[in-house]
Image (tube, rainbow over all chains, first blue to last red; front, side, top):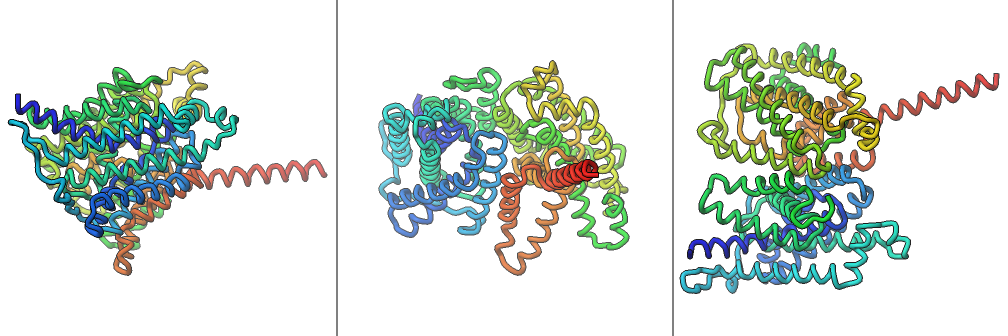
Length: 286
Length: 318
């Protein structure tokens, strides 16, 4: 029983972290229908920038904010240079952002180093809390808290604000929104920036969680994030949250009970969902 | 061009150059097979490395566990062809109905599963450490292997050219340009897509087998996403939908790799040669979406049309 509870909490924490990685992608991929393969590069940058800034400023908070800003700047360049010419064409987006991914992952190695870097936590987030037999690691609780804040914020942004309304309308019918006098391009740029910033946030929180960061982590986690978006259903923030938690919990139980399968479990999950319901668990359109 | 490649070994006898060109030929085969999918039919597969990997492992396992003879090599290739044929058939039947980006993710997932399998099945594959193995007598000599790969590349080029110029190939092109219209014309889209993915899978498996023999070593790297990206880069840069472009693209990417790593002696930035490759690739996608060969073809077409127009005008004037 205690094992199960511990596994559940760990799984939920990992799941929330995966949600943070995937939430930016949900916005960009799900809502604007842009397949951004460079997304993984953005959170690798977030991770490296976070670790670097933490070493520089000694403030974990500043490091995260700095990482998000750097991620947004990169996202801005990506959107302007790569994605703007290819809105609406999936295959072109895929191809061009893949190139972007290559370039920004290599730049990462130029700025920092091609070798893995160790990431550390600030003192106040180290340690753990014991509740009876259950040991809760403080940083995991912190990640869960951030995840909840991001989730609620995104949900409110999309459902309660005028901007959310415009974005959702723009996805359904771009021309109509444009005809109503709204500069949809600007809105999309903004959403892209938001997504890029969240990717960097996810990356900077992931770094101390996994302890070691390396330039290739971008691709690895991007695949995970894509799995979550597809399993959850494109464009559904709620879907990605649930899919991310599912992936996290499933992963933590599998790692304990059937370790041979743990690496493949996400892929199998996506395979099953795609074959049974290609639109994902919460996806409306097929 | 093929002729000049055939006489090249007479002009130079540097071993490293043979190896580099052999690698170009092998990747050209791999890129051609990828181009059949993306360039001709518009299918985005992110898991094309799985067939490459199947080819590499089949051949290496046969050569390692049995005798290093040509017949075991051929047996390995045969097994690779059968396996990849079956796998591509199954994947195609199950998932080619899906929208393009779903299919892309699905193939990525399956190839990653194979990657995990190869990592975990250590008794067989030795995981990421990989294993070396002896190669048949004929392939031991770099020069003769150079010719084997060159000849195979030319043969496959001719076969695939015939395939794409056949009525079936024309249907594939129609699907690539406008799937709905091809369907409306009464073609069973799925049927054709499955056929092309089987052909692409089998050709990729052959290239994988050759690749393993060239290195005399195999590890799980063959199943990594980078392997698929290589094929993508090469066929994009050379020109999608032109088999010859894939050969050219393979040459450019490999030569660029070679040249830029040489330059690394001058300035360490060139060690990160992928940056330049990535920039070149982005430029191609955004500015010359038809790639080098495609752009040249378009330019020629335009010139031909213009000269034809000029001819009719002068005729009319006269």
